[in-house]
Image 1 (spheres, rainbow, N blue to C red):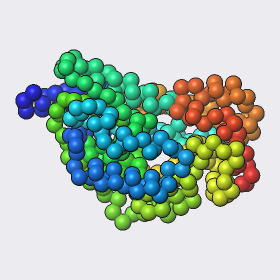
Image 2: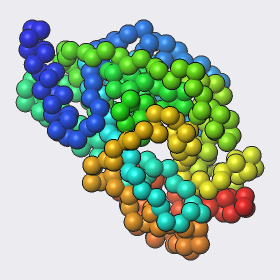
Image 3: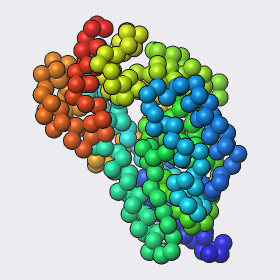
Image 4: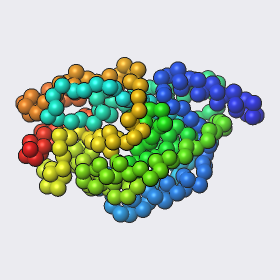
Length: 314
């Protein structure tokens, strides 16, 4: 494929991505800039410090080399999907992270990326591809930054200058040689509002989040029957994830547009959940509510544990 063909194919793929409703679209070339190796080294230090808690999957060695994900990969399409909805939940005695308000974003993004991949197949029948979302052993945030759709903030989330950090990301790896965009430049500057606001000091230094101290980790991933006392004391009303570091980010204080994605609109039960009702729900009721939700990784007994923990804290 010559340069002209590469430019044309790159333009077409980006157009397809925007047609799918993605809000941010960019291309990175493999092996990427020196920042990829720096991010890989940072991940290794993070793991050596034990900051992953019990998330053993973070140690998967495939993360260290993108060739492990797709042999012959030359380009990466990075996409961002805004999930912000400007609405308040009615009861105020429970807080649930915004990422879980709608349907499971993994499936939403995967379907959209697969349609783009099939378009690529029609254009280049010999090409190979692979879809990667945050469940893949892949440096998704580093490659999103490399593709220019946002920079990694000090809270470790990707920040886009137009839609802040309320953004899901996904990637389509390809063996086609596409034209790369300029990598994003981190512009958090001296701001440390996310670090200061974290109730458990989980952001131990810029860009370094210790999961062992993180409310989101404990409410979502901790499988112990009881949460640590120091976490319970700082939970506030958070029973599923935590948005504090994003809520205080200056990039999220702007007039962020509401997502137009139908499947990311808040579920009715999310907007109306309260402690009393939630504690009375049976396992089957929880499973019914959590069907098609990214929050289904939180088992019914964990929901009860989390809710009882915030009750003990008040």
